[in-house]
Image 1 (cartoon, rainbow, N blue to C red):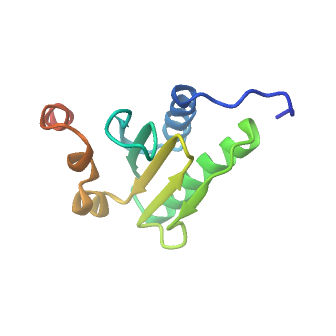
Image 2 (cartoon, rainbow, N blue to C red; image 1 turned 30 degrees about the horizontal axis):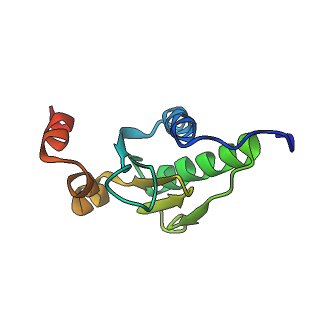
Length: 122
């Protein structure tokens, strides 16, 4: 990245996140628009990896991609255990879970309206 690159707008950041997750073979990717619901970020993205190792690799790939291609740094927590990794990118928060941990916390139900949540299950 050159010093003249423009910062990513939150919607563009979302696109980079989703592309990285798809490239890393993350599963069940859910995008939640937080605008008007919370001041903490514009987007929350939730995805699953099949194992602790894959969860950590998905998170590492995303962080490395954003740093290398866009000069964007992230705060990352939980990569050591790989059950649930949280990546704070300012405009977006990304959660990568092992499926059983994701089922336990059910973040989608907390942030989506009942109609949005039921549409995911269809």
